[in-house]
Image (cartoon, rainbow, N blue to C red; front, side, top):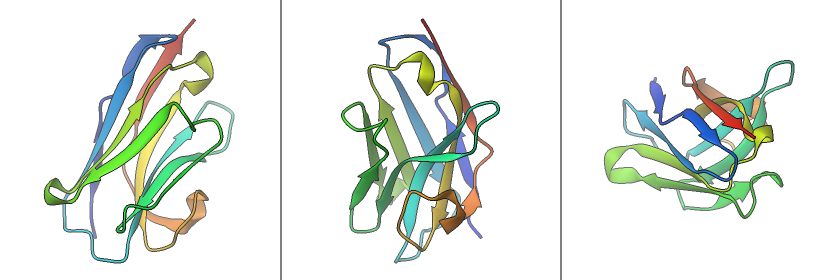
Length: 121
């Protein structure tokens, strides 16, 4: 089973940018879907963006136009470029992998430990 390790979180001011990365310890067998999810204190974990082995992407409404998900298959790396961050983006961000398409966290089987993103106003 793959292990996922996230990095790139931090503290930024509103309007700033961060780039999250997730490295998978093993080769992702096709078909697969990988995604970024986030969980703020007191809230349920929610999908942010997903991508499958064909490069098909899906974004939560809150991420559209600001976040971009991408993957480097040669490096087993998933990334999330986050621009124009707002305080509401503050959360723990998780990388996850699975075999089913969608933004619902229940579809994903393997999870990283998370990386914290804090956006101040």
